[in-house]
Image (cartoon, rainbow, N blue to C red; front, side, top):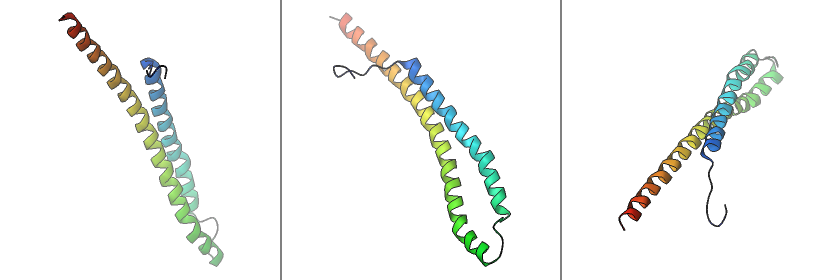
Length: 110
């Protein structure tokens, strides 16, 4: 900000939003592949089914599900954030152009 004004480079901001959305999609994709591999591997209970394995299972399963749910949510939210950035830039540019047009019409009427 300079002198109370915000300068927006719309194309750069749109690219940033699009890149952010792509990053979110990449996170979601990694969750699907690597997270799926984690789920499959842990489903086989490689720690065993004896008392120690059962104790590990009780502790591990909740953490696994929490991490995998968070991973999914992060991917979706980052994608949405990128989309929202692009939408906000477009709305800002539209509002600025509409305001400039109204200002020009008001100046012409004098």
